[in-house]
Length: 70
Image (cartoon, rainbow, N blue to C red):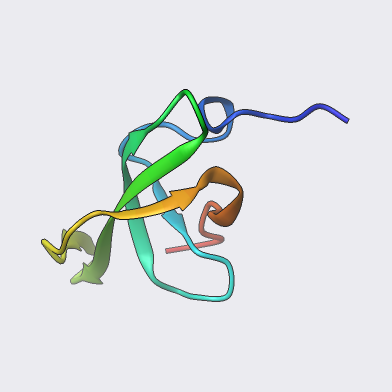
């Protein structure tokens, strides 16, 4: 089985979620050395994504997924 790197699975500014939640995040940065990603929390307002302007959150690439629908 091929193991994909964070860079292959995601790209900067892509919207993602944490499995089991409906919270939206935008990828702010991908660390190519260890696969960690820095996420900025977002929410939907009138069909547009809006940043919560909170500090970035650190996750590993295997902890996030692309949202099924917005």
